[in-house]
Image (cartoon, rainbow, N blue to C red; front, side):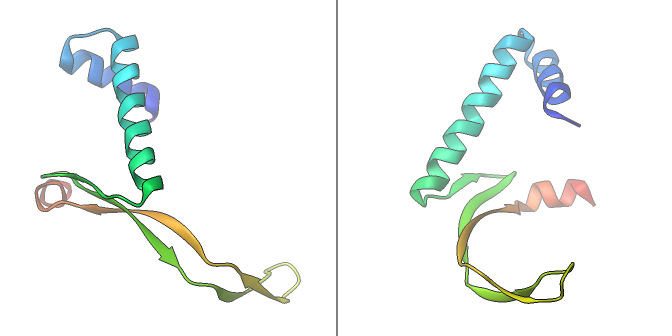
Length: 90
């Protein structure tokens, strides 16, 4: 499912226009990204938790040349599915 298909499904389920559903989805995405940028967690009970974790610096290998490279430390977004969500996916 892509973003357009998700918006169409949301519009149908909520009985609203695709524009309104798109605005709601964009608002959710922006609010989630804003919270994660601040270092906060976003928890949706029954669905899951979005959080930020830190990957430490490490050594890697360039697959084309085989040379060793340094990969810098960085922050990455994580998602952990909630119990109810995980149970329905099985």
